[in-house]
Amino acid sequence: MAKFQIDMDEAVHIFVSIVAIALSLSFAQGGISVDAGHFVFLMLIFTFTVGSGFVLHELAHKFFAVKYGARARFRAWPAGLVLMLALAIVPQFFGFRLPMILAPGAVYIFAYRGQISLKQNGIISLAGPATNVALCAIFIALYLLSPLESLSAVFFIGAQVNIFLALFNLLPVFPLDGSKVIAWDWRVWLFAFIVCFLGSSIVTF
Image (cartoon, rainbow, N blue to C red; front, side):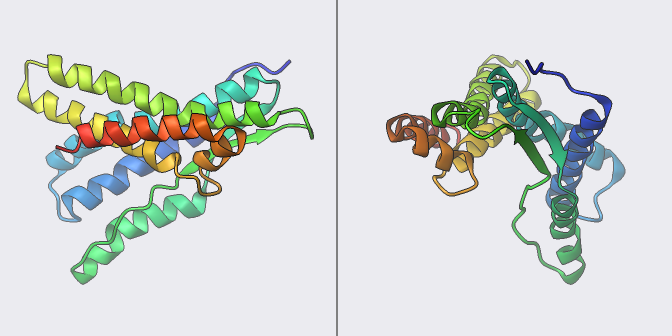
């Protein structure tokens, strides 16, 4: 039976993806002329909020895939990494900015035909957004309990990022998670989507 483990090669893929996400968002937010101190500050914020949300989302997929007997590995997507950085940096040389597309990589699941049932595949897919909802709740709690305004702002960003990741990934469009959840049980998908939608309305005030 497969075991949940992360070897050095997979850890490198995860690390590179987190750094690429943080770099892209830091350049997009701070600009290409941002000073070093502010850039490092942005890197830390985006690593803590976006990087953690992305990685734990993907590892949740992997955990349940392994639980159901499949093999699963996170692999960085080189084209996606280059695209993220290009969208964050290149347009600024011409005086404008473009919306960011975060596509650094994904968990690839290897299973024999029939090894993973429709329900199991739905649960595997739901695990990622569910993890982001849990992280959103944790960040909201930290936001409410934090005595420092600067930390509260970071925690609020973490809540916003994670609920957005959950809501976006639950869209019923292939290959997003929502398409696989709705293929298993549309009622489960609808409940999860409503929870995320309501959550997003709370953290966007």
